[in-house]
Length: 227
Ligand SMILES: [Zn+2]
Image: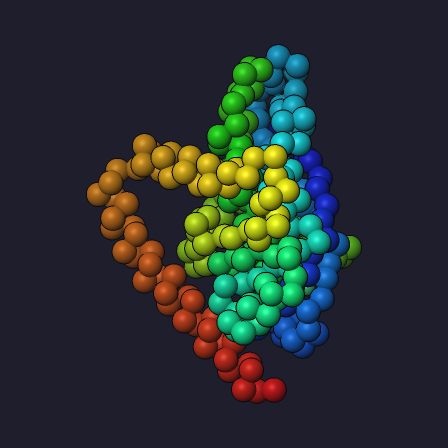
């Protein structure tokens, strides 16, 4: 069974490399809708898959952090990044371009990390994040499944490479929320994976990421020269 919870936020961005010039060269905004789809094959003591109330805490905080903020890709022009951070106090720096596709992967990683560290004590059974849908407009959306979230060919989303503006973090009930989630994710990885396997994957992975990043930067520079 699937259940779905909807969140909304307003955000602004530039999507470098996008074929539409309005998207790739002008700061513009969207009213985003984010659908979290949770999957389970048994019900809890309340005969529910998952109490939506549990999503009002950390998961809501993480998604709401993007509201009335500018999403900045760390691979963008450093002078643009510096100017935006100087003139706008709500920004989120992310390691991938802020397209709807990458937002869906980013939210999958964030929400999955938060859910994996949420205490479930009402008999919830095997509930897990099924997918995340991000609507950028009324007519189109991107849906990220688990295999997409960890797909290095789409760029690696390292939680350590995400940075929330100090103004955003100060608003949180727990300003250490994101640091705690990252540490928890790191501990879970240590426990679940054979260290030898990690070292092999890590070296392959970094080459792949470096290659992808170089390609993105090259494309971006080529586009800049074109205009
Ligand atoms: Zn856009």
